[in-house]
Length: 129
Image (cartoon, rainbow, N blue to C red; front, top):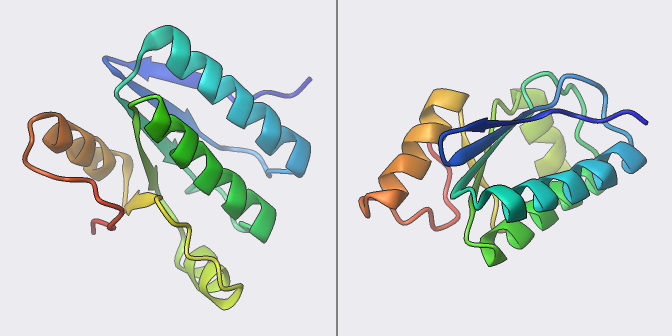
């Protein structure tokens, strides 16, 4: 079965999606991330989607679900690397990805999570440039 690696970086998890996402792989990834958060007690989750050319409504919903489930487990999620065409498509589809925080790249995503741990950012569902 195809799986996407989940790497641990200190108290954060990094998921870099390098393959085309299909529905079954997205659900498997969601389950794997929740299991990894539970066993590692990670405080941050970075999901890098820079290799994805398409994010359809199902994948968008799964990203939102992952962020919501992670929040319940006390883990902040930042989606990074969204291509402009993907952002345009999501808006055109009417998907706002509630609860999903975005940043331009992994470095800025890690900064957001670190600042939240230090109490200097609320990670309140906004996006960082």
